[in-house]
Length: 116
Length: 114
Image (cartoon, rainbow over all chains, first blue to last red; front, side):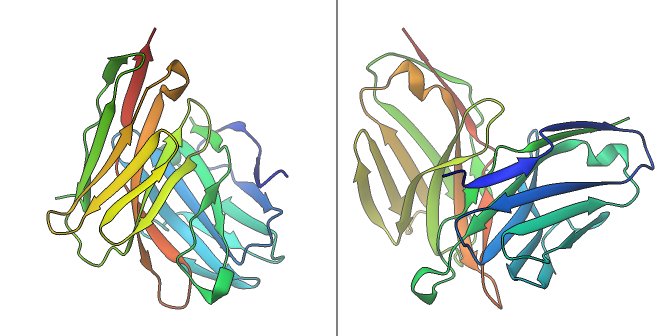
């Protein structure tokens, strides 16, 4: 059981370039999330999705866009990368078991992104 | 002031020791409390998940929530070198429309020495 899979694992970009980070989960989870992890800041929520075709902003959404065209996939896009977006990006998913929104989140192993 | 405070460590203990980790929080809206373990260059892995005050035990791990003081704790008994990792506390509140938002501590780095 793969769980949450993120691609790529590493990437180096130049300022102004664009790219898309891919997240796939095989647990049939309704909810998916994108976080960034920076030293001394903890993990912070960028965007999230409560179902196919729906997305919402988290606490640090500026400079990012997301799409959830299929239930199992959640894409994070950087349209014009900036050095401040150098970070480790984590995708997570959670279920709605028994209709509850409080199920724990399960994380992928991250994408390490450096922007020069 | 951060909503969740966690001592970053590093904390170094000998093998077999009892480890005590904690976080404090300021937001009474948090409903669920979690501990994640994160190995180097890996994603956070859920260790413990609790709701309301009290203790929850799973093998060598015990999670404790004290809502009156706004502290949560993780105790590790008979610590092993394989427990060496960063431990993240996380607190959850339900989002309008579904899903839940986790607020994380910055993590405590633990090293268990032979």
